[in-house]
Structure formats: structure tokens, C-alpha cells
Image: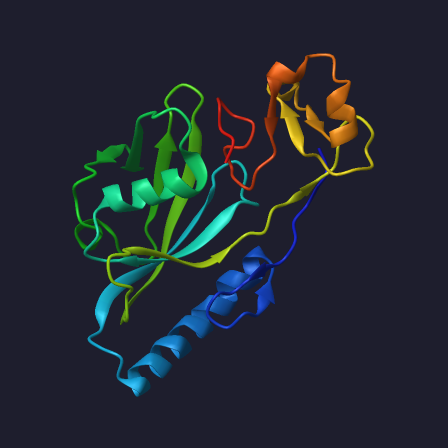
Length: 214
């Protein structure tokens, strides 16, 4: 499986960066954006965390998030389910070290800059995410929206395992256990495992797992 990861767009200033470049960029762009908001006197500042979430085994999938410090872990869990994970109503959990964290706890009671958590969805075919707290700020938050996206990876370009030319659009859930199964449209039509074994390639670390279709 050959992967090429494109650049992504900062939703604050529309600049484009790679994954590592985006982390460095937001460390300066986010404070500047907050300063501009204060100068415009748009309302009362509230505490929030700048959080990076990425696939534990697939770091080419990542999200930079602005998360209300008064939100609960359950709010973050639901957001991750909606954007990346939900397929069959599986259970999920956050953990810090060996300790599982209660979903009802507020982020401000749990998180601090530099802290890393794990998030696991589905305890059978598990998708594991690394949740890293980069910074804590005060600023404007969207009403009734505790989690906002600052930047998200654009879909990696994955080359078909069979022809090694076109980009993969389907993945065979049988062949992937052998480290292959990424198929372009033409190769998917004649794939020996059959159409019922195929799932669409989507921009998520859960692509090709269980019944996830995005």
C-alpha cells in the first residue's frame, strides 16, 4: 500500500500545511486569531483546549480541534463517532495510562496541556486514537457546539495494490488481513473475493473496518 498524504487547510486563515507543519502553524495562528477576536469585542471569553487527535496506528489521519473546557468527555466521544468512527453502535472508552475515564467528566477536570489519552472504539475490531492536549486558551466559542474543527487532514492518496497505478476507491476486508486489498475502480470489479467483501475507501482511520462506510 503506497500512501501520499496531501496538505490540509487551516480553517482560521486558509493557509495550507502538511500534518507536522499544521501543528506548528496553529501554535501561532490560533493565538493571533484569539487576539483579533478580543480586539473586535465579540463577547465573553471561555476556556477551551486545542487538541490533536490522530490514528494511533494510522497517523496520516488527524484532526486539530477547539474543544470547550466545560464539555464532557462524552461530547468529544460523540464528535469522534460522528466524524470518524460510528458504524454499528459499538462501545468506546477514553483511558489515561491504565485508568479508564468516566464519560461524564468535564474536560477541565481531566485535561492539561501535554497530556495524552487513548480513545478506543469497538472492542472487537478496535480503532484506537491518540488524543493529545496541545494548549489551553480562553476565547470565543460557537454556541451549542462544544467541538470545532481547526484543521483536518485531506484524504491520503492510496495506490491500488493490484495495478499499482490508479488510486484505491475500495478496500477488500478479506485481503486487508494480509496487508493488501486496496483497489481502484477497475480492479475492484474483477476482484476474486467478490463485491460483498468490499468497503469504500474513506477519510478515516476506520476505513475498511467492520461496516464503516464514512
